[in-house]
Image (cartoon, rainbow, N blue to C red; front, top):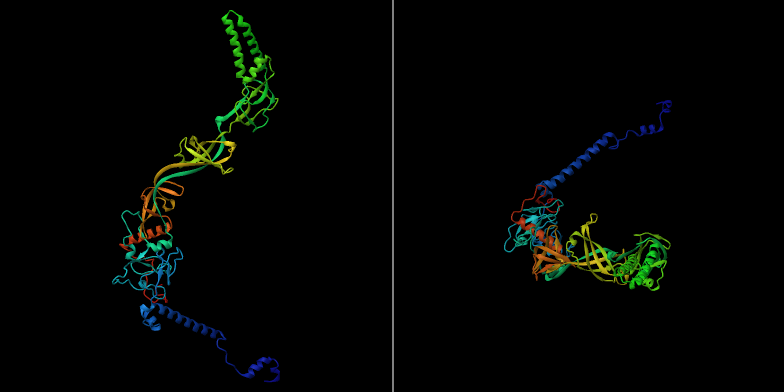
Length: 535
């Protein structure tokens, strides 16, 4: 090639041409990429097919993974479980993490991998004194059972139910859904189950009601004007002032009172003049006029001392002093000095607080047992040390529609004015005082429609009984039927006995004809633990 033609060719092209043709690297082109992905897909497909055949084709599984024959007795390991919580399984002895009871050894062995010997093979007929398996139950739902070993949705093994666990756990006199519980003396101590003796004694139902102090309405006195006039002077100048009976309250000027005084003095003078009269009628008439004038003064609330002074001096006074009709506190004052008063107008209110009322509210079930005259105790938040004795004075005839309570009136003494109107107070009542068989209130298990107690029959055996309860109070309950005096009832860890009793009753009910598991419950399959055979 001439030099002119070489001038138009790049230098690197010339170098490649001089070096000669080179072989392309594999996969560097589009054809190489396709071959590479094809080979990779084939390898992955073979691996997937091998895994599927390994787990699903027994012959292929045995060919690739032969298992040496081992001694089952050498490979077994002891398992421990909780009597109250059978789904708790442990490889070594200890305490239950839920209730703290000591774990007990499971009769039978467990093969490595978590499947028990009883569940890894069909249940064989026991020989000699071995325990007989009746059926298997779901550890989380005792109502789900199986005649053969199985697993639940979470992969947990069904728990075997032995014949001795349900034998003798029923009874004709037991409450429906309950069975006798046999836990043994050791488990009784470990579970903290305590018993108390039913005794015959008196019991009452205490009621605590909140009330408000109000004045005794029979001890409230209003001082009213019975004549027209003007208040000249007040001896009681403020509300709350203490007054005693007969103490001056005010001075009132009234023209009618002045005229009545004059009439009385003239009538008395006429009586003196008519003493010498020979006419009996004239003497009686003058005496009657004098007596009428004197009575009129008394009807105007003029004190007797004022009338006596009027008779002694014979002089008419401009104002008349009115005295307190009762002792107490001035709780109302409507007048001032110079006030004009009219007949019927309230002047002062005097209240005797030596005895007070307490208006308290009782609920419907409490109100049916209260009676007028029933004794009560009272204490107050302001003076906790004060304990006063009183009685029920009145029971209102209607319920409050807003609070659905019945108002009851109590009457209490008030020494030293400790109880002041509108003060809050607590009233204590003892209702339903009866004598009968009494047990601690903690022995009762409330189911909503009935009450159950567990009677300790000895040797760690507890029998459930349905009881009727009467009066309850002070942490105790009266038993009307179901328990006799002298019998022992469980008062501690009752919830453990309740759950165990219901579980045993369910097992007893299913022991006669254990149903087969539903299609949704996977059966235990043959296979080797650790390779998904039981899954």
